[in-house]
Length: 171
Image (cartoon, rainbow, N blue to C red; front, top):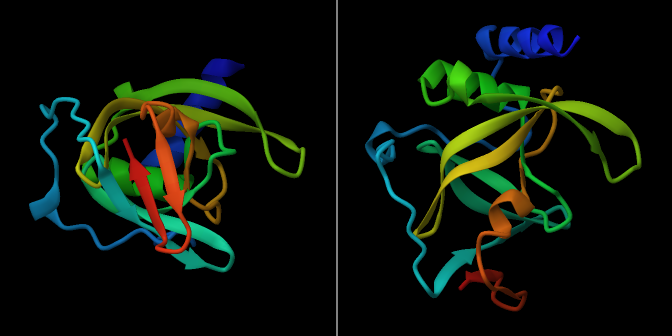
């Protein structure tokens, strides 16, 4: 059964992209693509500007070289992307079959349980910090928002939020 689910997820990735989910993927710019040979770097004092939209805070993040806006979500266990973004990354050649790790059950904020595909993000760049090989989940819903969760946040020792300046400082 698990092999069937993984094959289904692969098929989702291989099908056409119908545009972006409501999670605000930015226009892709090849000149900002990070090399796959980038090494882990974390610079002290990395400050990110947040943008409040509808009561949530979004932050700019690059996933495998593609710019996207994520909801800063300390309650999310993983970085989460929709099937739409996964297809986009696959079409760009920055998400491959080797990056698909399997499936996992997730509990959402409303208490419901759903299945997601677990993937490896080769690079996650936030400000001047680059994280490598970060676990993420693909939600099988094209309308799902992008969530910047604990699979990335836990890799920073200290995070402080200044709501008066709409800034997050990664230390």
